[in-house]
Length: 213
Length: 369
Image (tube, rainbow over all chains, first blue to last red; front, side, top):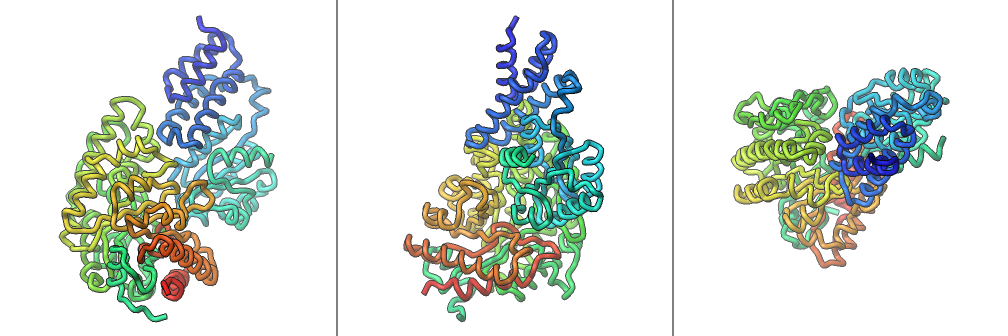
């Protein structure tokens, strides 16, 4: 039987190499052996995704490998998360994330979601083509501290502003940090529409939000 | 300052690395020029459904702005839509796929090339419309067709995230991706041959996945760069009598492959100053890429919406100065076209006066004297 270190190392490797079946197998073994799920998340999944993030930033791996790694992480996470004690789960920062109305390009949003998940955030993925009220409702429902929005297209940048405006009008704005991203966006645009910050990539986003909280 | 060369003389000089009176200019104003039709503009749906209307936007754009090129970009969902993906057609927004066709690995195998001679297909509208503006403008400016590369068309048809995962998930999924790419490459071949009948001077490929933020050299080579895909398509364009050109608005484009290896006549690209490693015009010229191709770029498309006209003039002037300095340093001719890095946003909020400002500023400050 493998010891704890070997299992966690195996889980990390399954994430780094994007082997979902392997990560699921290790996650089940973790539960079977009574290893704390949070230890597995920290020392296996998060550690693995950090390696993936560093390799992606260094251009030694690329989107296909990152996406498979993310799948692998989520496969294990689905098994481990229900077993986290309620008091530990409550400590995680809740955030909502989505692509604004009129835009269905979500690959960037999904990468950002993955890196926030790996960083220990409780990420509520709202999907794509989201009307402003979806951000408002989800922020309220989840007591979110962070709202992340993205768009890849120029015409839908106005939807981003509409979403920020809706958060203001519905009285949610003061409870959340708003971060935006996507090719046509910038810090200047973030300030113009009343968001708190802009990030150029997933790691930048995590670092900025952590610093802001 | 009055131009001393006409548009075609200037473009040909730029393409052959000869001196020019001034830098070439072509803000990539395609969809936005539908706003000029009939004086009041037409919806996107009408523009992309009727070849005459499609062509009219380029003709009206030329009359209004006096560009050096006319390139027939419609949008990036033409092929996916004709393959069977659902395309959302908002009145004033670029059409895009909102429901991919391919749902599983079997879907890759089932792709069928549409009948592009059917007037109901947008492929047909694109080809016929391109022919119409080539007929109208071909003696005035250098014209080119615009076509999605195979990997772009596939990611539009399946969804990029799924395609990227399927590339390496397992042997079966990898094989399925290649099967679909083969079908789409054949579709592209039919489109190239159809465009060639319309006699544009060139054909511009959109090869936007050749980006280091998406694919490395190995991945790109296997799934698009290989001769059986982009390689043979590039060759076919030349065999069919057109100049082979490439547009890639990615942040970290594969310049060594797409310029140095493929040697396109024109390479159109963007610049993302916030992204480390995104190549500026200066770096592109200094690194020898303008020795190989006429480079087009790289004004921020957002500027056409957000900037005051004075800022557009300043940014265009700055780019002209940067480019001319670097071209002179390498003893090159007119090897740069002042353009937007990607399509000028086609939305109603785009300032048409900024398109004019970009062109006029290039005419004034893009001279080599």
